[in-house]
Image (cartoon, rainbow, N blue to C red; front, top):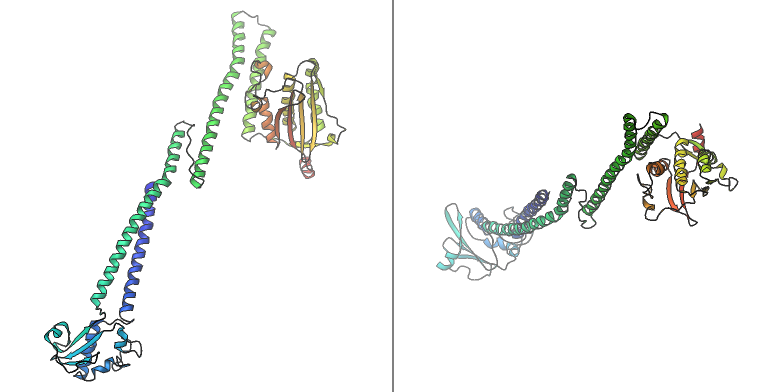
Amino acid sequence: MTKKFIAAFALIVFVSVVSVVWIARQSTASEVRAFMFPGGMVSRDEMLQTLAEFYQTHQSWSEVDSLFTRGGWGRGFGWQNWGWMHGSNSMMHGMMMNQRIQIADGQGTLVYDSANQNTGSKWTIESLALADAIRVGNQTVGYLLIEGGMMFSRADESRLVQRLNRAAIVAAAIGGGLGLLIAVFLSISLGRPIRELTQAARQIRAGNLSQRVKVHGGDEIGLLAETFNQMAEALEKAEQTRRTMTADIAHELRNPLAIQRAHLEALIDGVYPLSVASLQTILEQNHLLTRLVEDLRTLALAESGQLSLEKTVVGVQKLITRIIDTFQAQATERQIRLSLPDWSKDGIALLEVSGDPIRLEQILGNLLSNALRYTPTGGEIKIGVEDVGEQVKIMVKDSGPGIPEADLPYIFERFYRADRSRSRSEGGSGLGLTIARNLAVAHGGWLEAANSSQGGAVFTLTLPKTQPESRIKLRG
């Protein structure tokens, strides 16, 4: 990843630098030419060529000063677009550099002086050595001497552009180098969290689910790291749950199987007589195993969302009455009183919910079974109903010792028992409350537990109330 970052930054820097250098080079050359020639600077080569053409046309230097008078340059030859002129400007005006221009004939006699001095005088050898020869063919017909100001030739232009190009290339190299250094730094900085995530992912793949990464900032990479930590935490919790559940299932199955095996071996060895009473114990353990397996299957279907519910309109009063009838004999045997809601209060007798009647009875059955298990002899179990807008709450309150505060957050977990000293035959499978909550969620409701201020535990089942349109659809 770091190499890709560096390559990407390097490509961006390279394209940017090349583009800037090329544009600067083209623009510099264009501007230099525009300033040196059309803008007013005179090319020495062009001046020599123009003077040579003037002499070739006139065969003398007479009236050469007309080239330097206002409106004279170029008009006599049809060269209106030459670089020294701007329409009516003279060449002398166009130079704009306070240059002194002197022209001598082939014998070195001065025929034109822009300073109007010494016209007709003879040049010295030193002056001739400094002057540029004006040639027509192979013949030297005059000399041009320019003093003061600035004069550029095409070679000067090329050298200037080259120097500017070199300066641009050096600047581009320095800028590109700095850009690459910054690219390397940014690539390493951006790549470090990704490398940490990669190493942590490899650790998790190897089974180290406790691996976490540091969260750097609140940007996208930081959000990715935070999400990764949440995922790792969820995986670790799921793995711990799986191990705990596997151990719990093994423990729950071991006792009934051990009892069955012991009784069967006793029957085979003749320790127990082969009678209905002896076989009854084995049958009870078989029922216990069957119920445990069925509970595990129901829980697995509910948690995976694959539990099929045959929903219909269920009257709350009818549902509770049927559950009370089922457990009345067991409650009477233990001298526990089951209290029903006051059905005449607030029209609760007319409340209806949408759900699977069998599964709803299973939820309330688990709650009543749990309440009977912990309610002492002579105690009371109260069932209440409350209309709360679009929901119906069904409360099951016992008069037992309540739920220890340390155990309260865990009672809906698989195989969890607040009283760990209870045997399996007395304490159930340890899945009843877990199944009850998952069934409540499958109905779009919720199940929670708390301790009553008057003592005892209270379980509250919340279910969505049946709406008129839903009632028509479910009954239709």
